[in-house]
Structures are given as structure tokens and as C-alpha cells.
Amino acid sequence: MCRWAPRHDSVPDAKAHGIRGARNRPPERAIRRSRRLCRVIAIVGGLATAVLWATTLIGSARSARLIGIWSSLAWIMLVGLVVTVPLLVLTGGPVQLSERDLLHLAVAGIANSVGLLLVYTALRRGKVGVVGPIVSTEGAIGAALAVLAGDPVSGAAIALLAVIAVGVVMAATERSAGAPELPGDAVADPAAVAQPNAGVTAALALAGAVLFGINLYAMSRLATDLPLAWAALPARLAGVIGVTVPLILSRRLRMTRAALPFVVFVGCAEVAGVLTFGISARESAAVASVIASQFAGIAAIGAFLLFGERLGRIQVAGVVTIAVGVALLAALQA
Image 1 (spheres, rainbow, N blue to C red):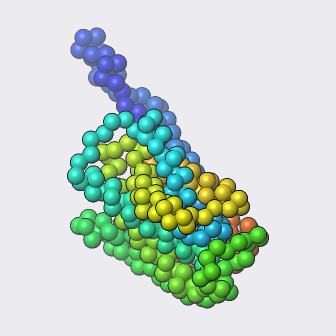
Image 2: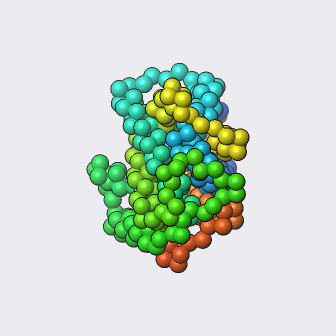
Image 3: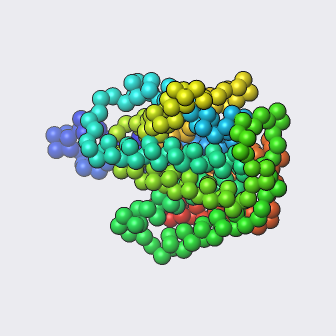
């Protein structure tokens, strides 16, 4: 961390050297420089996280439409685990896991994996511009879970949670004209719906956000006990055990040349997003959360530019309401 703290062995003893105690204090300029550096790290890390999470949404939507939801999740989890294991070896170090740690790791892994499956389903049948903002409410849901667990909450936080809920309803109000046809898209799942209902898509995305919120709550209980690389392990391990291995054994794991770069990129980007958010949140959780939560807006813009996705007016208003509510709630949690 960048916080300035003088080392005890480097500070001269005031009594031994006849120096006033004021000289033992860190210089004000150094303190200001350190605080500025912390903010810069939080901002840059939060922005990197937002970009990474936005690209994973777009890439996941593409891969899910190319090889199907289950195969997409299986490959992304496998790639993520391959990337995470060396990070654990290089940076994790030996750890002692208590029964409570194991429980939180299991909850986080299962919640994240099932949440990804629901979000990929929503992305395959709906629009990134609708799914992304709803998924970004995971932080608000995590805060609500903390409240239910007994954490104190202010009236302003309750009001913002209500505003976010209204935004979700608005984003799901209109019916879409169907998922946009992507160039060269080879739909692997014959059960795909030609004209999906935006309400069903929003419900799937919201269910995924709830599970992501549970994951955030579980990981927050582990953040102070385990190295940063451990944050990326539970979901990848659970996904490989619960999805990748069964698909391999049943010979239903699919892959195409067009989908390969997407699953590799998303698998790596998801792990990188976990790490960049962890680094930025260590300096300023509020700043990191506010900036990272804007990944939904970046994903919506990217989907418009790449796929030509267009939202109805009520949906646009709902997306904006969600984004503003999530940002204000993240700032309020400071």
C-alpha cells in the first residue's frame, strides 16, 4: 500500500539526540504526496477494472452466442484457473485456512459460478446495454446483504437502494426486438429464443447480480485474512469442477475457432479485473467502487458501437438511474 508510515528503526530518538518531538513527525508534504498517490492508484485501478469488466461482458455475450452458455462458462473458468494457479504460487505464499475461511471460499465460488451462468444466459438472449447495468447492482445487493446480517444502514442508503430497484424495473419495462445478429454468429443452442422478453432477461441478470452480491459479501470476510490472488480462485475452481469436468466427461464441451479468442480473453480479463479492483480498493474502497461500477456504461457503449444495440427510452432512463444510484451508494459507503 502507498500509505506513508515512518519506520520505527529509522526515526532518531528525540531524547538521545536532543531533538524536539516535532521532528519525529512525517513531513506534511510527504503526507500530502502519499495521499495523492493513494487516490491516483485507486482511480487508475478502478478505471482499469471498469474497462476489464466491460470487455468481459461483451466478450461473454459473443462467446455464449457462438458455442452456447455452458461451453462458454466451462472454457472461461478453465482459462481463469490456469491463470490463477501460477499467481497463487508466485504471490500467495503459505496460508492457514480455518473452517470459516473454507465456508466463505465455498460460498463465494458457487455463488460466482452460478451467477456467471445466469448472466451468460441473459447476455445470450438479451442486450448488453440492459444486462450490464443490472449486473452492476451487485455492490448494492452486497450492501443490502450486509444490512440483513446486522450492519448499520443510513436512511440515505435505503433510499438509494430503492432508486436502484426502480431503475432495474425501468430497464426491464420494454420488449426488445430480439438479440442483435452478430456477424458470423453460429448459434449453438437450438433452444435460443428469437424474440426474448426484456423482463425475463432482466430477471436473469438480477438473479446473477444477487449471487455476485453474495460472492462480494463472502469475499469481504476473507479480504483481510488471505492474499489478493485467493480472491480469484473460488469461482474458477468451482466452475472447473462443476461445469468444465462434467462437460468433458460427457463429451459435450464445444469450441470453435471463432470463439477461442473470446473465451481466452474473457478468462484472463476476469482474473485481471479481480486483481485490479483489489489493488485499488486497498487504497480507497469508495473511489474504486464508484469508478469500477461504471463498467455497465462502458459495456453499453461498446455494445452499441460493435453490435449496433439500441435501447428504448425507458430502458435508457433505467440504465442511467441504475448507474447514478450505484455510484452514489458506493460513495456513501465511505
